[in-house]
Image (cartoon, rainbow, N blue to C red; front, side):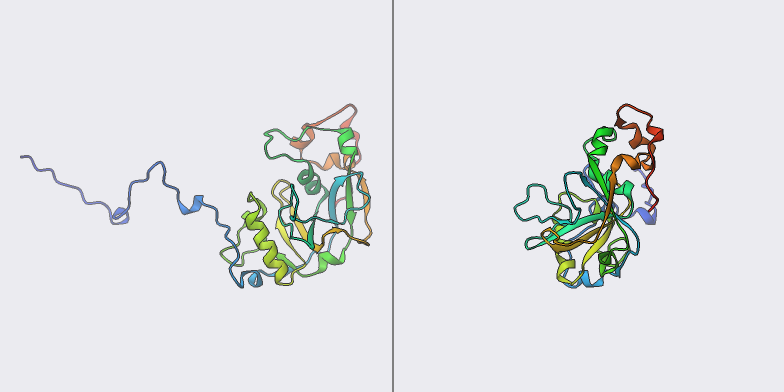
Amino acid sequence: MTRHSLTPLPACNRGRREPTASAVSPRQRIGLRPPRPGDAREVPSTSRRRRLWRACQQRHLQPWWFSTRTNNDHPGRFDLERPQGTTYWALSPVTAIIESTSDPDQIDPPVLSLNALDRLSVWMAEDVAVARSKLADTTRPSVPTLTAEIGTIVPYALSWAWADAFSADGRNGLVYQARLGMGESLAVFGIAGAAPSGPSCTRRAASAYYGDLPPSFRLGVGGVGPFDQLPSGPRP
């Protein structure tokens, strides 16, 4: 019988299994976890002293609407249960427009006509007190159960759990990285429904910000006329 000598494995490879097609490394798994008792308290508070922007259909007479996930077929990422609700604002008009119009199922940018943009209002609120209040900052590292996936994960079960935890901890909302617009955004807590007297805002048609949209999104806007002559909105 012929004997074959075996070459010893290098020390760094000993005990390791050969990777299989079904193996998934921890780095490829979702890192966001439900908040443990006390986790919300460890997330730092922050504030934002600047303008806030919100895009919504022009038929809405004011932007301060707090949505709830109770009996709601289309709840938001951080919606609370009644009697509480959540309103969403961005720190730039571009982020507000993209978050309002993008469909993640589309490979190409959203096909918007100028008429559609004109029907979309972009509201601006300046130095709003709520933005200077106690907001949980999820854009900074804090606890291992909280990752940047809070702004991207679907379905919303985990983001709802964190919103509930922040609300129970006395936070007025949170700052997060927008999933589609990719800019900083705010989710602000309040009583569900329309605010009886929200902070004063000014509004413009979304088409006024056409020139500020990224080129690939501008290519997705259809219509007639010299798009490059559309007025740009003020810088945030």
